Image 1 (cartoon, one colour):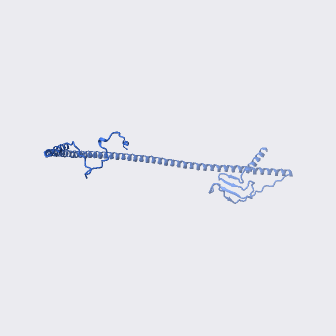
Image 2 (spheres, rainbow, N blue to C red):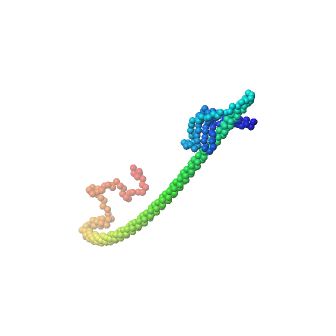
Image 3 (cartoon, helix red, strand yellow):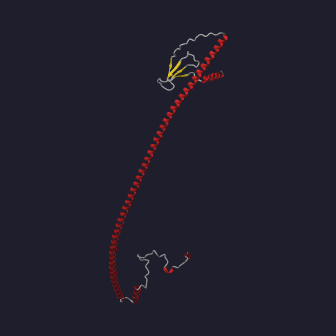
Amino acid sequence: MRKGVETLILALYACNFANSFSIISYGTNNKIRCNGWLSGSSSRPVLQMAADDEEPGPGYVRQVEEKPKKKKNKPAVTYKTKEEKALAEQKALQEKLAAEMAAKAKAAAEAKAGEEAAEAKKAEQEAVEAAKKAEEELAAAEAKKKAEEEERVQKIAAEAAAKKREEERIAAEKKRAEEERIAAEKKAEEERIAAEKKAEEERIVAEKKAEEERIAAEKKAEEERIAAEKKAEEERLAAIKRAEERIDSYKAMSPEERAYSILFDLGAVDVTPDPDSPDYDSSKDDEYCDENVYVNFDTSRLE
């Protein structure tokens, strides 16, 4: 009896935490009936859903009309005393309450099992979605990695091509520079040879011209020397002739005039210029004579 009361009390606690509907399973057809209230009253609407029906979505519940229950006529029971009747009624009430509590506990357990099943299904769906998402992320990561690898390969190929182009450019520039250097050296050598040839020709021309000028100068000098010698000879002869004529003129002179003329002709006598002559040069009359100029002479003494 005590164990039954404890079971009823546990059932009451379970009912307090149960939802406002109960789920009852009938065999293998997976029929689910949801009562509107746990009190068991048939005056509330009933929600019923079959597992074999088409489910539009998770958690969908279809509302149907409640079918009226047929009441069973119980056989009449006679009691000897009022106490027996009261005990019987109390017992029946306790049995009814125990049945309701058991039904509510069973309904709560089935509801919990349904919730657990729904949660398990939801968890399974989430696991499937998570796996799908992980696969998509893995595929995206692999695609990204593949794209990065392709980009890296393309970058390496581009760098190799750029390096090759740079090497070809450097080689072309080096080749062009070498060709230009060779051409410049060849041109410089040709110019040097031409300059040397021109210088040699100019040297030969200059030497030839110098030789011609030297010969001409020597010829001219010789001619001038001959002319000078001839002129000197002529002047010597003319001087001799003039001297002879001067000597002859001495004969007609008096001894005084002859002596003066001889001294004058020999340069022993200087003739003082005549100040009254129009040819007289008076620009140096204020200067001292050469014989009257003394070294370190103080000219202030003359003042």
